[in-house]
Image 1 (cartoon, helix red, strand yellow):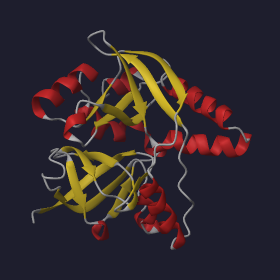
Image 2 (cartoon, helix red, strand yellow):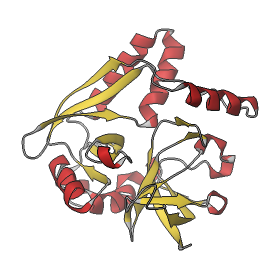
Image 3 (cartoon, helix red, strand yellow):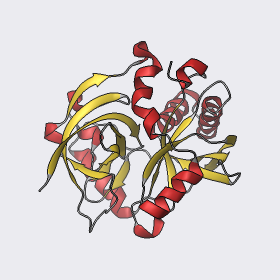
Length: 263
């Protein structure tokens, strides 16, 4: 078993998904300065000990091995040894965006068309890009799609855990944009940040639709001209769905010409 120590800046934490094998898992990804983009799976994030619950923009070190190609042959996919995980730094707002961009900037592609092309030609499954033009955000109702087996796994897990029950969020959040070749796209967003906002606003307002509207406004805000929106996208694991990408996360520093030039 070929183990390697990964040192990466965490940039992606997607909303937890139910799993019949692991109860629930979180799609976590980040940037290793030697390897580039790395996906960690499985990560039962909410079951990690407090000190190991890494945050977005934490720098972590963890022993990991490549996933079994029979299960996932994407080059970016690694299986972490969670007992070895440790947080070694945090690039918080007090350190400004330049420290984060030192990690992110080298991974930014020419755009979504470039990501799609590299997926088709080289199997790339994770990438960062700026949308050429943002066309808007949308929130649409979504029927519950969790299977009975998935629901049962969550219920059984809750019997032996004090963590808050996992909610199915009955909305799909999407961003519409035009790529660098002028083609329109509509990608789903599964960033935990926006799902957490929906839950917070639902509890505050007591209304699911109004909470969804708040999420749409937040997406529109970070996609406005005030910010330099960079999207972190990943594809699906099933070989037949590799061309389907979702927005796993994003960053949106305020527009700053000097920062963009790296000055």
